[in-house]
Image (cartoon, rainbow, N blue to C red):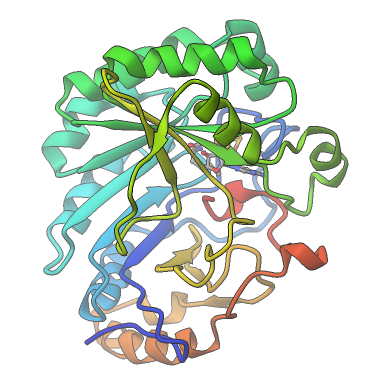
Length: 326
Ligand code: SAM
Ligand code: SF4
């Protein structure tokens, strides 16, 4: 069975938030830090996560990325990874993390079946890193990236949100980092979530800047395969890694969408910038109900919007990507 919408898009990739808690205060995401919402439900349990992933897997979902908030704050993260990796049909499980706990956790996560790791590193300058993330922890995060490489994750993807203030010297530091290390740096266009309209206006930089900087340095864009994700990747002879960008404003971004998102409390979000969340939790309480979930998902996906409406100034109801994982 496949999960397809009326436009023929096939969804084989689930982004699952497992907590909305975070220990960083990124200026574009949780500038005031994370506060528990009063009376909020607990995050999904391992059993609920397993039932959810089984339903998606019966519909052809093969790849799951765990995100947050900060997924490494869940003490049962390795157990969650092992549970999902063991679901028939699931080929690859990964995480997106701020890297805080990665040097310690990487070997256990690898043993549990984790296939890939994305680490957010917004600056390679310690002071700018502190200014953006609210934490003076660049060294520790870089140890996390090295820990992941040492644990056997062949390439580590590094997400850096492109913000005003990222100058050529900083850009060069990222480029140089990829020379000897198998690191895929991806500059992410700042997205206008509900909480940051003034921040967005002051800090947004079009990703065309990244393409121009790379081409000026003699990098070339890698040919794209139909199954590639939204990242545009550039290579250069002699570099172990790559540099690129991800921008929701890029032509074809929505037409190629292959992903669905579920929040840490079990709400399906059909579009990152949409205004409709559907709680799946009542189907996750026991194995008896979980059987119906695949049919529910197949029906819900039919109402996935064709495209976001960022161009018209509509960025949906998500106030911070920490609530849904980016
Ligand atoms: N805490 C983890 C981390 O930072 O990697 C995972 C969750 S975080 C919400 C996932 C990704 O979303 C990170 O790479 C982060 O930089 C990115 N992100 C958050 N808010 C964003 C925004 N407004 N625009 C662009 N990217 C954003
Ligand atoms: Fe936390 Fe990630 Fe948001 Fe930064 S981007 S505040 S690390 S959830």
